[in-house]
Length: 121
Image (cartoon, rainbow, N blue to C red; front, side, top):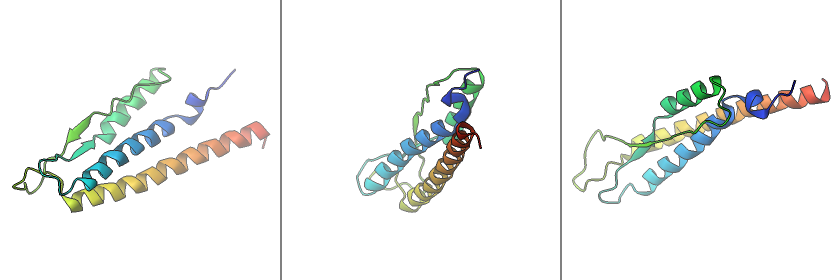
């Protein structure tokens, strides 16, 4: 019985890819903190990951991760229309970076387990 990498690695490669996408969005928000009219964007990570996990359970090997970027509602609107709040974005970026490392660690553990199984240990 053949075991594909998709089944062996589970949700972890998808989670890592989604974290990379979110990192790009958050970095864009930080880069545009002083751009008039810029609207901060983010991904609903949990919702997209749940959709992906559900698709994987249904046997779809390569689920389409529709990571729709949503606009963030600011706590304090600015006069120039920019919705980026530096402290909120920095916190989200740091949290996402830690979660990225966690996802990478899980993926490494899975790969190490596969390597040990192949080597017969």
